[in-house]
Length: 404
Image 1 (tube, rainbow, N blue to C red):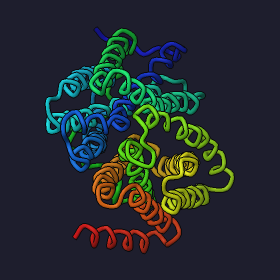
Image 2: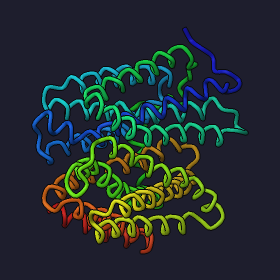
Image 3: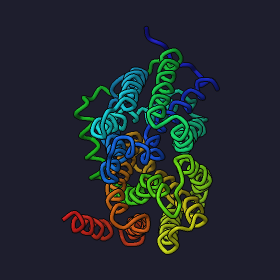
Image 4: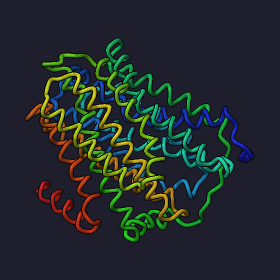
């Protein structure tokens, strides 16, 4: 049965969209505070358990690129229901995983289907009146952000009291309820393009080739996301060891510290309008560099760790908002695909950060992770300080040399 879109977006439906974005995005981050428990229970090494957040972020990045064109080609409601069902089932399988390899495979699928979070945003934009579209999308993005921040705290507390498997089962239940509510409340939304899936997918490459500011924004945010993920994917493992020796509840509670920075970041949007996004990005990247340098030179200081968490989260999110303001102004008719390129680059960066950080933590401890974060953020700052073509070439050469 086809449902017609409402002429206005009711508060209840807007609440569903914001909750949907938050709960879906949370599925990406539940694993971070409980990595120590997973490693102990499944007998996995630090390097092996580091594959869990890496594959989750990699799956999300790939899913953004592969699935974003579907929103233009098919009914968005159907996409939400299919992804929600698969995500809920996969979270159950993750909770039942008998080995680190089974959990790693489930984590990849969780990442692919947690792109459901990005489906709720265009649904809100499609249903909202034009005069309040920006405000509506902002509410849904706030829900997404709160889901990310709350996931770490919830996971840490539940993991400490009931075990890591219950975290996954609880997440599965929340997504199942969300999918049922979406089936009951979401209207059908007709396709906006008759182009083939292949043509829409190929257009992503065309957009990237045509817009140098897009490439620069994607590279800069990917490097900042590498630093971001390096910290969050290893924090629980580092806190479990001396000199901290703290449980997953404390690791999850660091999400509150991150919230202080991230929730202040929307003010960067107003600053970008007044002073220009370039200044915001340079200032934010410098703040991230300084935060990681502080962690590197003051290892073991809990006060420095908390303050640095607030400041680098602020810097990363401020840069993201400023980068989005640049990207969204390039081609208004292709904003969803432009966003897909930017967001996928972020999560490829996160995946790389998680992969490198687990190895660095095993060899050089959390101080090495801080140095990794400072280096990645410094490269992002170079992207904004040096003229676009030269910066891109310099950073690309550095990454190629490191990979060899």
